[in-house]
Amino acid sequence: MSGVKTRHPEITEIRRKQWRRMRDAMEGEEQVKFAGREYLPMPPGFKGAADGGVEMYEAYRGRARFPAFLSVSVPAMIGIIHGREAQIEMPGPMEYLWENADGEGLPLEAFHRRITRELLVIGGYGILTDAPQDGGDPYLAGVSRDRVINWDTDFWVLDETRLVRRGFDWEQVEQYRVLTLEDGVYVPILFVGGDGEGERIEARGRGNAPLPRIPFAIGSAVDLSPKIQAPPLIGVVNAAVEFYQLSADRRHQLHMSGQETLVAINGDAPDFVGAGVVHEMRGAEGLTPDLRYVSPSCSGIESHRAALIDAREAAVMAGARLFEQSAPAQESGTARKLRFASETATLLSVAHSSSALLERALRNAAMIMGLDEEEVVVTPPADLLDQTMSPQDFAALFGVYREGGMSWETFFANGQRGGIFSEEDGPEDEFARIDNAGELGDNVI
Image (cartoon, rainbow, N blue to C red; front, side, top):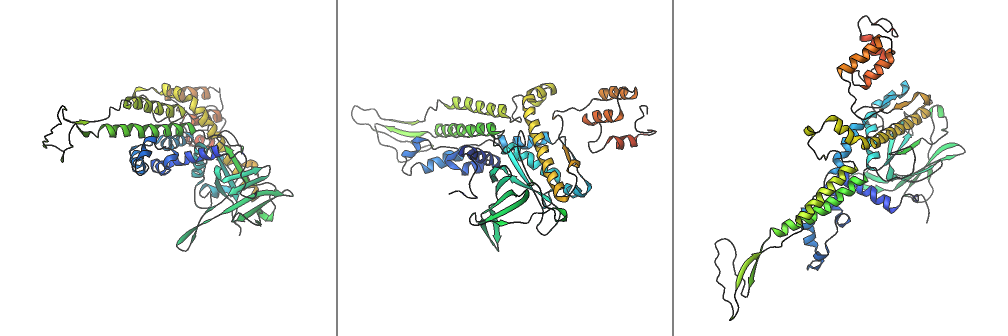
């Protein structure tokens, strides 16, 4: 039966599996191992054991190692993207969002980083700009991409199922929010339990004005679109899962090769074994008794080692830049830039999508507050690579400015991009600090 729980056709089982893989990999080894055979199948030979191989599989899984390719790479990429913070402009009445973007005390810059994190991990994110029912300033409510379960033109369904505390106990409450337009006016409808008639919620702007559009924004790692795409770092996770499975096999072989077994040939097994024990064996007529320790050859150990290296290389190629082949001291800055060039294009698209998504959410807040939306501008960094300007380059640039070859504003913008001037200042601020500066616009200082 169709209903509010119906999922959009793009949310296939493949996509849901990818999202699950990404979430589990971010949680780390314990979460991946908790998923059991989803990531590490049981070897067929284990099933012949008396308990169906349960005990052997537990030991097999326990020895395996799941690498932190993703959980280390994502923070590093966020650091690169936000190493040069986006420039955010908005009207004065919205300044409170700098300190409290989500209504729960999360600063706007931290909220922006959360957007970027979700774009890297899941490949999408949604933001509902909402306001308290009893009045108050609007806030930004982040929505995980896997919680946006259905959509169409002027139609969204958000899964808001969550744990709710009842005294000392916690209860899972199923809830869905439908965002739609009725006669050109935004109307949210809340479904508690997922069945029956939904409850229409009053949604008005300042001065009790109706809202002409749905204050919901959604984007992917490449654009502002609800279209679902594969997470940009899914290749890193696939390589990590491959590494995990190979690690289990290799460590199982190492374990077995280190567990020598005492074998009695043409005679009875000894009652005791260990250092210093002497055992006398008598064989039947015509048979020579023998007592020896044997162990498996495990000839595939080296092959597994080579395969583990290949899996690590696959993670590097997929985006895990922290797993470098050469030591940082042996690699020049130019070589590092060239090696990261192809990945920087992807990171730059994520940076632009993250900023565009934040801008649209902030413009929705301006709409609710009755402010000029055009005053909200979020400008992403133009480049993510290190562009620190050398003193020699800065001196040459200053000479061009003094000779009248460029304006102070252009000179300041280049110096700011090169890390000379603070990113929080404007050209007027820096000009005012200079002794005998004269009037802004003069070429000679």
